[in-house]
Length: 281
Image (cartoon, rainbow, N blue to C red; front, side, top):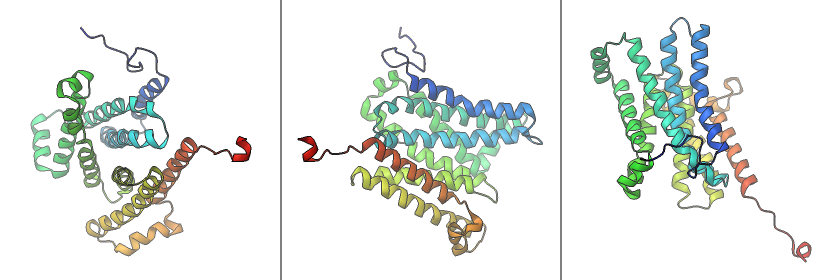
């Protein structure tokens, strides 16, 4: 019978400070949400607010799980891969809490909840996303990797890119007038997708720069397009808001800031000064 290892342990059983820190950090949003609930800060509709917060964190953690592989290479930090599974499982846990709180909000009327999921498109998208996360979580164990085999397991878990897109689409659809949060997370997703495409064809430095530049540009265009078709705002006015000091800061600013930070990390971790010939002698 296999021995269960603690989440903060390495494969060899040794304590991993990195895994311990990440494991503890993944509980922080839940603790913060519960604290706000207990303090009355989520009034007048505390359950509704908790639904929104858990959903937001599910989407954020999905993107963090996608960030692990690029950051592992950009930061020359191979051990970072050890926390990817943990972050993915946490994303499912927050998504499941998101649905569970919706059931609570509907007075535990499962028939009504099922009907709403079937009839409301944004709820259907959200439920499909949860099922996808559940499938990936259920097959994330070492035993399932051995049972499925490496190639089949990898093909299955590439569905995370589609699942992430569905989660963000759900986020957009359930947002009201302000979709800044959805735009910001979508921008991170676009940066990660551009990087994934570019790293197969370009050197590391070029792929990183391309992902930031194209990610920011595509996000600005997507935001303007969304507001044009959903809210009937003038396309060029929304696009121009990215350059308007009175509208600062826009989601594109945060994307550029995070992209610049990632590039600085890459430079710090990968730069190796070359000694001159004279110094070497």
